[in-house]
Length: 387
Ligand code: GAF
Image (tube, rainbow, N blue to C red; front, side, top):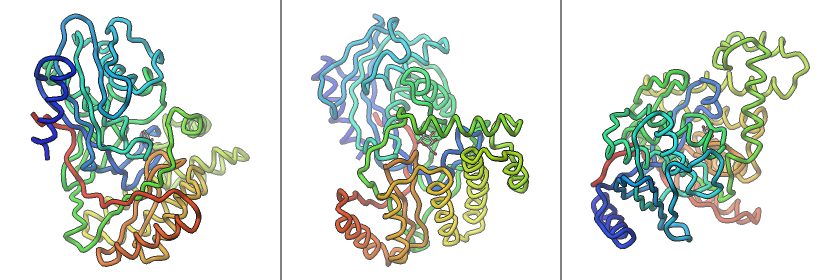
């Protein structure tokens, strides 16, 4: 696929900018297996990369101009001056790639401009990290072209800064690290405190299972206030408990911590989710490492209940996917990503995939919800140069 896509993207670049690009790069979206809303609490996450990618054809410029074009969005070529880039000055999609260039320059890297043409197969607003894929593909291209020598995790940090400060969305580090660092056939066990990583083999097909992604088509956005409110609530919980981050509340000390929070009911719920979710990630890792893959199903189900009841970020469509899939025989299911819409994941025996898929589709039709998009997710490669 790479060569065909790279060729087509390079041709379009040439039509737009009048010369061949210096290279073509791809960065994937991700799905998170377990570990939700733990990343801005210094906790654990376990995403894997999707085969869906954002592709960028890029050339350097030396005149302080950044030109951006997306095949997927109307509006033609957008031209910006590198020295005029300023946080929260742009409310359009261009803020993501421009923010990356801004973050690189802010960190002292001598990036003097670029021509960029982009196209993506990562569904946007589906909780599958289309924003991170867009940031990471541009960061990787500039890293290569300007020979900055930054590693994947360093690019992820810069992309997160672009998103937090330039775009103004208070997200954690999971999505950018997943896009930059995941490996095909593996889920990424990531400690978001120090970004230490372990690639965990994750080959469901070999064990007769499948993981489905069900995009509910309910759109979500992280710059909306609800994500930020949850984050602020978690930070309040850490402050009340006298720890740097909720990661520092031990699982076996949870009850005592909840007692100390007294009548701060909302904060108690947020703390309970984060502390139990970190424990769930560790449980999933040890189950996978001991070859007990089917046993992760119940952990996914617990995770969904915690996000629905304690963190309160599910929605009727996500709950319907989970309840219907489980009733139809799935081994596990939960919402994935930031919440308030987006996607759910379903773990099922290969033999049950059609039954489960049909049940979910029928339940959505009966509830008068927009038809969901269902696809099988197999761990794909992280960001890379494709031409
Ligand atoms: C979104 C954010 F971008 C991530 O940083 C993470 O917090 C996730 O929601 C929830 O786990 O994808």
